[in-house]
Image (spheres, one colour):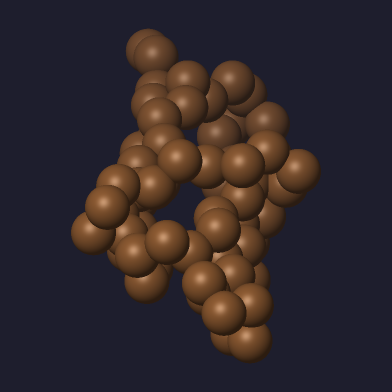
Length: 69
């Protein structure tokens, strides 16, 4: 069985969004989505959004674990 994960969200338009050190492109309305094939194991997804002014910052880190028995 293959497994995929879709992370999606919305922030203020023109914000800067990153996953770890990688910049994520957002749509003009501030939405974004990312798709991943999930291997066996535990994965973390450190996502950060910084407002256009740089005054507001939000960090979220989903942790996903896929096991095989």
